[in-house]
Image (cartoon, rainbow, N blue to C red; front, side, top):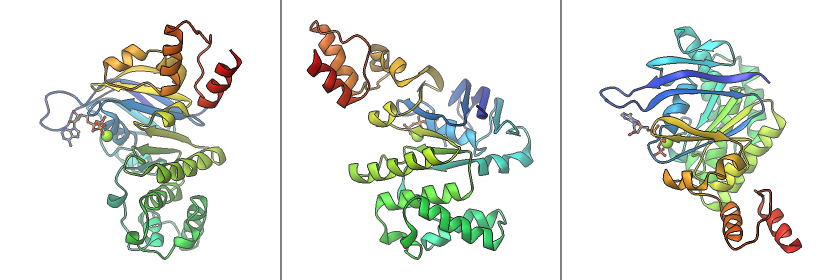
Length: 276
Ligand SMILES: Nc1ncnc2c1ncn2[C@@H]1O[C@H](COP(=O)(O)OP(=O)(O)OP(=O)(O)O)[C@@H](O)[C@H]1O
Ligand SMILES: [Mg+2]
């Protein structure tokens, strides 16, 4: 699989800060992956995503995107921005246009995408997030979930190689959260791109193909959800939760009911318990 994001020993420090926000971080993300990034507040997750697309530049080390754009080459930083679409946390801080259409058009215009192509991409992106009939709406007429879906439409209109969600669902109610996640899931299944989701929601972490755990500016653990959540006491030690479905199996094991291989799907766990 093609490598879409590659960080090689990246260290980053904010101006006038003694301690680096990221220290010696190496990672690579390939096409087709869904990577969840978890970590306590201030562990460096958002800083990491801003390095992915050149919003921040490394003090040491290199960031390479799509195997061809490097943070070390000024002209290529713009290509990094296009290749990595980021959706942030606050639905109200992301609108740049006065209507949904203007918002999705904004980056396309900046990139000088020809008019006809622009219209095609706006229609296509809004259809993909299920907001075709909202094209003339103003931001204040939208719900939080709809605003985040517009932000996703704006990101995918640029045809990014990676869609990054930086706690994009954390300000939404459970229903809107599900609506946004199923939109992302559908895009992921139907497009050749990777998804990187920073999240505190454990069910979203369980759905990832790989999990990266950050602590104090470093990657401290990495693997499939199962491999990561097996380290329950380590995770608790750095202030992270373990999903109910995993905790339940630990408690059962303590009481003498060992199910053998760990199950990450709640429904499967119920079935398994009923069979025992
Ligand atoms: N603009 C800034 N100037 C100085 N320090 C900053 C700035 N932004 C973040 N930091 C510091 O860098 C470190 C990493 O912050 P970052 O926002 O990347 O963490 P995070 O894991 O995204 O946290 P959260 O879960 O709260 O979003 C923290 O110590 C934070 O205080
Ligand atoms: Mg953050």
